[in-house]
Amino acid sequence: MEFSIKTGSTEKQHHNCVIVGVYESHKLSDSAKTIDELSSGYLSNILKRGDMDGKAEKTLMLHDVPGTHSDRVLLVGLGKQEDFTEKQFVKAVRASVKAVSASGTNEAVTYLVELPVKKLSLRRKVSLLAEVALDATYRFNAIKRKKEAAEDDAKNSIKRLTIHIADTAHVAEAEAGLGDGKALAAGVSLTKDLGNLPPNVCTPTYLAEQALELGKAYGLKVEVLERAAIEKLGMGSFLGVTKGSEEPPKLIVMQHLKGRQDQKPVVLVGKGITFDTGGISLKPGAEMDEMKYDMCGAASVLGTFKTIAEMDLPLNVVGIIPTCENMPDGRATRPGDVLTSMSGLTIEVLNTDAEGRLILCDALTYAERFEPSAVVDIATLTGACVIALGHHATGLFSNNDDLAKELLQAGESALDRAWHMPLWDDYQPQLDSNFADMGNIGGRAAGSITAACFLSRFAKKYDWAHLDIAGTAWKSGKEKGGTGRPVPLLTEFLVSRSGQARN
Image 1: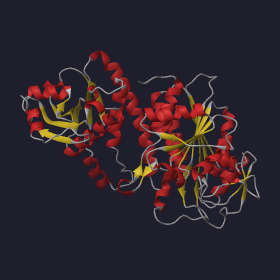
Image 2 (image 1 turned 90 degrees about the vertical axis):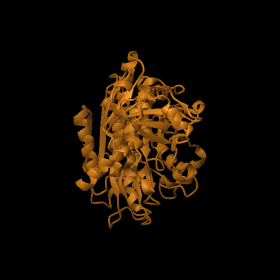
Image 3 (image 1 turned 120 degrees about the horizontal axis):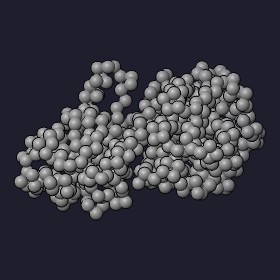
Image 4 (image 1 turned 60 degrees about the vertical axis):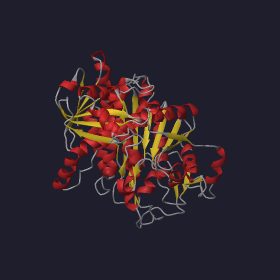
């Protein structure tokens, strides 16, 4: 989709569609009032007849409105004016873009950024509009037949969206917001694409290739460590997970070095299990196809790197992605086996389906060499987190309350929320083992917490946070697909760390 910023009297210009808002109680927004005056009260008459009530996300497409030079006028419900917040703004944008796309028109001008939204700058509104518009029109057609892909693209018919702003003095601010939104949408789309690809395409090797391509495109430093190098590092826990698979494991290391030379980096660690059968502790067959999404932590790191590279963010950021499959065969790790991690700590494998923590723990130890200012790991780690928080909030665990607060605030600002979960020492004994330094599971009770406790044992030398995205990284059912989360949260966190204000 192409975007442009325009000012001036666009009601005198021809457009395929003009998008304006209507509040509940039949109250027109300022831009809608202008059209109403041009049309001698046409919109007011529509509202009086009850065809549009202004409730949030409701839309009404009007054709050939008198006095205008546009083929269509789309009315978008905004809800109650006193309750019109950032979330309602996002809902209005999404509803409007979907309605225009469904109408068959390929061009529109939107006046929605002129709506007053509490505590929201013009830059932020334009950024949100671009981000949401691109998300609403996202389609995954990479592996469909060309004819079917073309039909899908026809449904997604909007190609150009003009964003109208009232004052020419604010064009630069609007353009900056447009850049923000497009950069974030690019990272979210990449994350979705990688998650949505089938596991016979999106293998560890494929993820490594994507990282190398990002490196070439944006001048990032990228290194891919093969099995021999992983063995030399002593990553016995990581390698234990890979033993049942024919696919070779990869350790991907990416560096975005745009901060000061003496600035300690933020390290992002992404779980990259490209398919998870559960190993010898085999999962039930129902919905096992969704285990292709077990690499969404890795995908979110790649997506975030694309976004911050597009933004040219002045910050040092390192990405570490341990990636492999978890498969059962005669060589696979068994329940009862003991693995030796890179840190030297030994782990009794009590359940091979608790494999994400086994690859992450070695990556967390590897992160020490970068002397990080903070480390954040991102993983579709536990079904227990889905039971605890559902699909709305990401589980957040941390050994540093200030870091946790940064991430929580970033999630609130990005509309990509997390919830701070406990990481008390009381839970640590659940990981006790008679035969090793620890077991890899702590029983059914508090499963997401004991998983975080396990990881915390490998993150004692720096400030660390763990994001459990098992409930937020993808949707099931009819709308099945990757969500792109938590790229917005991570981006907002990194932007804040860089000292660049976007609001």
